[in-house]
Length: 322
Image (spheres, rainbow, N blue to C red):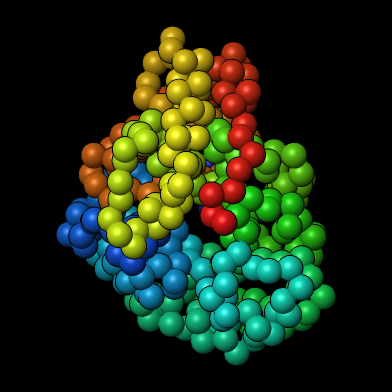
């Protein structure tokens, strides 16, 4: 496993991190806790040291599983979690007052709940699970960060940026209070490269790249006949004619990558890691098989300029979260 410096925090984080949404057992169905725990343990054995979870993932279930593994491990691990919006609206709606989403007392109470779930005294990175630029002037969120840091409850603060809205957090980064951002970045959604990544490089902000495989589309395994369990998040994400759209775009990408070695998923992860602004990428991994294949990508290194140029041509403007 290779490691990168997590922005100005100075933390050495594994290039491949662990995205723990899927182990929450609420929106990604079909897994079980035993497999999730084995996958987490195997990832750590392979050198992974960064795990991203959230209070909202299974109403704390993901955090509790992560905490169990963290407490039994002797390795130096870094844990990121998130405060869910109080109004439970994802993504944040522009114009909604921050008092309805992240009031001071709620930020403190949610952090305390995450600490209990994780079974730790301090969270390495506490993130806002949504963000809207109109909240910038309010000082409650700023005071909460300061108080949590002074109390030793969190080390650093970050923003998990709204789906497909990478520029919405730039003004917050300029306050100096935000140490890291989490953003959708993959072959199809390359929009963070325009403004967010240059700003992160300028300010030395850590970058967590999420959804590197576009919720499974960039594994190449989604077909027009693929089905998901009722109530599974992917049942909505790939609803209607979206699977047909995915097949069309993925097939075109695969044709252009015919002479490249490695699976589509491996190349997609390498695409993300080739950008110098990215600190770590967090694919979801609920099986040892996926852990081993994803962690091995770190050894492959960045893409060649020629392959990167080919893959960049496959940017695709869409929003399947709506």
